[in-house]
Image (tube, rainbow, N blue to C red; front, side, top):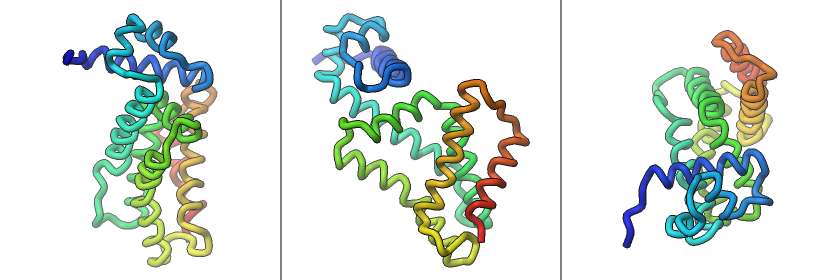
Length: 191
């Protein structure tokens, strides 16, 4: 069995994310991936037997990385608003710093490549945050007449849009705008 070069795996993953961002999944082929990664197509098949296995492996790796970033430095003892702000800022920073990865994850989640098992993994990553919002509802911190998942999605949608506009160069982010954006998001969910 051949030892796989980690740098080649990274090049392959980067090639997939670049191509998915530019063209989507529809035209993604192993030969395009190999060309973008500057590898022979045969070499690519040594690393991944099929496009589906490659895409699934990349998805799982990116999901694990993202999950660890979302809850980084989470302080269970902090006031509720600070807990939400910490997660909000982590998610926002992830969207900015790992924009291509985020685009890949979104497109994959909505593609025919995702299995029910992988969709469950994605769902399970949301559960701690939704449960936190449910706790906030019980404590009277956030709106209790709206489903906690909907509150969560409202925050995520807002973050995604700001990050996309920033990445496209149509909106500039500063520390002040991040604070203002969080406050807008908070005002949308607080009781």
